[in-house]
Image (cartoon, rainbow, N blue to C red; front, side, top):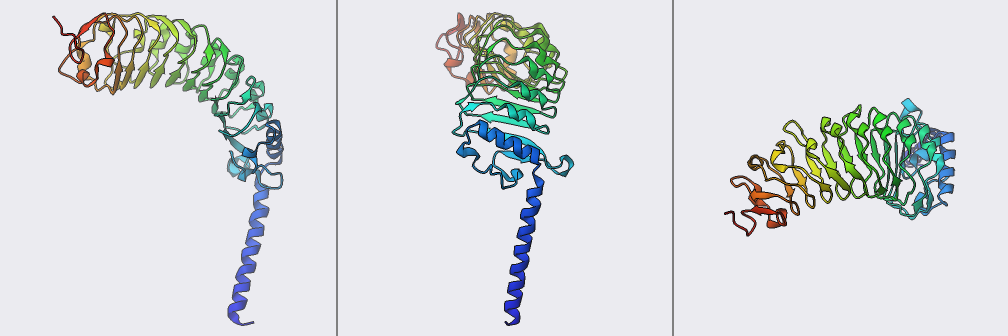
Length: 336
């Protein structure tokens, strides 16, 4: 053989050895307990094609839908994300046997039924829990308050019923709560006004919640509030204020009654939807100073002229129509 051929063979041999070492090393990354648990989860979900990469002879850290941590956590599984697959069954209780899990998501799998398993409480490092667009039933469990590192909670688009557990307010790091599109009843717990963390997102829309808004919620400075399409009554003006930095407030399609004339907005507010309520008063002149991107006050009991000189005329008549005696552009009715 000539020198060129020998060099080629040598490089080929080195590449093959490197490949074998890589495979051997990668197999060592996956914790065997985690692998066994994941295979049980796959079996519990009837071995769906969506999890075809979950093969016992390969490194579980390379499997689809999950992520392993680095060497500081010994490459344990830290994230499990199962999304939009042709999967049926119930949430596998074995998810609680992934002790280093920080993020757990089952999303857009409408054939997932049953209740939220209590084994989730074993996930002491869990920061994000998203079980949305499934077909879960039963209550929002009280035991979620044991997840002391939880920051993000979304149980939206399910069939959950019963009341909202007040114990959620015990979670010291929780800043995002989305319980929308369920069948929840009862009131917003008074305890929700005393979250230890800054509760930036509270989304409770499309439920059957009722009663008045706890005054204690006025102590919080949300980024987004959505209470739309419920049966809330009474005063919600405590959610507004010159010192609030809230960007989006949606209170539409409830039975709220308060005087809009006294509502002061912060310049950061970009979205305000109050349609289909029983709100009285007039639109404050000061609102012309704000740069609202979306506004809807239709189907209320407002009176008086729509203030001019600002941006309120940018919106079409659908923003203002069906009020008691609101007048002025862009409405056809002129003010006398």
